[in-house]
Length: 491
Image (cartoon, rainbow, N blue to C red; front, side, top):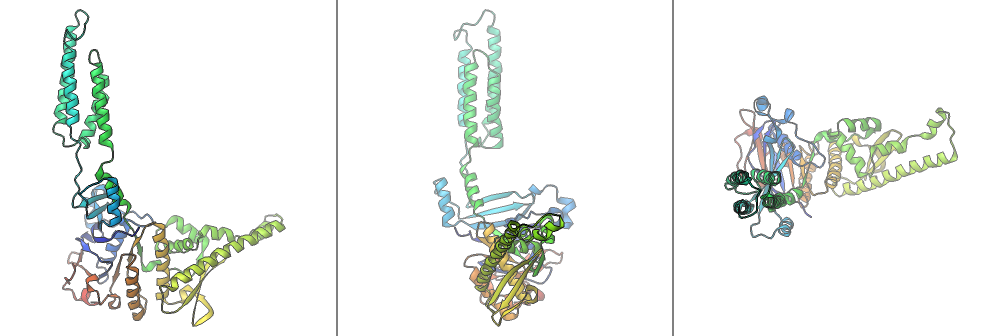
């Protein structure tokens, strides 16, 4: 099922952004501006809206510092990011499967708050059919009418001297029913918090008031309240539609310069970093590399442990069976690494056209290395960090993209922070072409201050970002350019 299209987004109460206003986006959107203008903050807030790997908002670090002590009390009160999506044919069909309706929304807006909860609102607004209090009022009228009939001397044969007690009971129960009726009558819907509380109270209190000759009448009233309570608690059309819409939200994959891989990875150190700081950009990229190869770093480490050398030091013999098992482990590790090498080489070659490259993963004891050869010197492999900076960036981005879009089990929106800074200008222009190709499958936003990464034939994709006099970010609307020479220079 294809990803829903994002039509616009808005960032609030995040770093140097009080309110970005609604920012319309295309299949590819370029946020252009000088350093420290707020471009990265926009992308990061959008990424945390629905990341492939959980990464919560951190109010102590990300709520605007000049307002935090004065204003921030509870994360549930502060929205961070709003995203508007277009309802596509697939979601429309899902909505109609749940409830047949002529009132179908064309868009919906999701808002993520600092405490992580998400709200969904439809446009045009979808009105929920209320559960009016009429049925409860009718049950109360039946109760009071039946009570009046049951408490007359002719209705039953009370013991001598008990008629005053009977009248007192009638007065007490009538007063109770009138009080409930006065609470129920102004309610718009029994699905409201007040309505649910009232129904629960009637269902709970009625059996406790039971006394002849009102026992049967009170049980009938309690049964009516329980039935209405069950009906009020059932998922409404609106709540079910909101669940379906939220389930279709795409993941947002963020990649920055700091996520570039090193060619040599010491596995024990990486395993420790993975436990302590899994969201570190470089740790995240290394994790993606192992995931793509169908391995975990722990598995590569365990398969590489040399038990043959360890056993003599422990005073244990090395048998033929142990040697065979050790060889099988080494072969399995090499086979998996070879498969991963061939797969990443094939996928990388479809996207990088500067030269043809062959990538090889190698594990040597507790070390993991990445070697790269190209078509000019096919037999000569050099370490990844000895390749160009542009090649390293592109390779690392591809790993994050391939793995996290798959790991999220949804189509992804790609967020690239200052991509291709180290690429040659011609390669930067090719990168824009690559973005256009990817845009057939994934919406994309990227930040830049390079004139070679601005889509000259599609200036409608560009949003200029600048910092105002108070240090807050401002984003230009389509076709409206700020009067700021440094911001406009790349354009």
